Amino acid sequence: MTTAVHVSVVPDDTLERICLVALNGELDHTNAERFRRDLQEAVGSQPSDIVIDLTGLTFCDSTGVQVFLAIRRLVHDRGCALSLANPQPRLSRLFHLTGLGPAFGLRPTVAEAVEAVRSGRPRA
Amino acid sequence: MTGDGGRHWPIDDDLSALRERLLRHASAAGMRGTRLDDLLIAVNEAVINVLEHGGGEGTLSFWHSDAFITVDVCDTAGRLTPRYISPERPEDAVRGFGLWLMNRLCDEFTIDRTASGSRVRLRMSLGPAPAR
Picture (cartoon, each protein chain N blue to C red):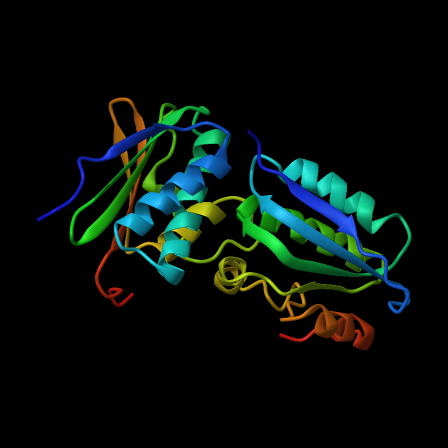
């Protein structure tokens, strides 16, 4: 058995120029590279603000955090914004400890994350 | 003093099964909530160190008393030494990041060299969290 993270783009016509991606599963060392490719594919090659819905992500380790950092660099290099939304307590703990919550524009809900990238001013 | 005799599991790349097993045993020992999550994250980091830098093979041992849960994560490479532990959070979230996390998350965190490799020992109090 291997662990998997499912990456899906959520179609939403109300989200102008924002790509909403939902994650489900457990993200760890064994699937981080595959996840990185899937996430890059979901994010696409066009510049776009990205909101990642973490509701269904039940685990993330330091290798997963590195993938999020890589995606953050990619999105920022394109002049766009990234916000992660609704982490489960276990993930919140990891983001809190690593001090990376503000860097990821972490928000409690998808709606607030959408608002954060629209305003273009990610806050803590 | 009550406790179990300890359990030993080989480390492989089925991390999901390993986490599930750890959660089950740590819950049964009385660990809950954030501290259970902390132990889970720390043990996972120790195990991925074995997969990444520790020769890819090793053993996870779990046991508890009334006072502590102890988890030993042993590798066969023996390259891990305490000098890799960073007191400050590593900037780039790559090298030493897992060790830094383990140090932050657990009540006790030690690295020892043994005859057969390196051993990471993670220990959590089952009583009130010690001041850190």
